[in-house]
Length: 87
Image 1: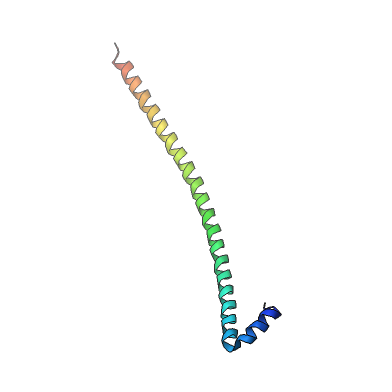
Image 2 (image 1 turned 180 degrees about the horizontal axis):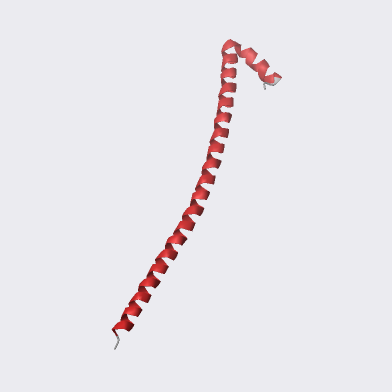
């Protein structure tokens, strides 16, 4: 993890520098782990959004077809009613 030049430089800083260096290393490690977790959570959410979008698109198409069929039935019923009323 530590290269030799960094270790020599930290040694010249004394115990405070060494502690600061280790704190920095652990901070970077935590940030990398958090970033990886964030990326995986983001990927999973993107998959969920894509699946939901597909489902919603299919549902909208079904509703539109149902409405279209209902209008056709109403039109047919009104035409039949008009024919029955004609002498």
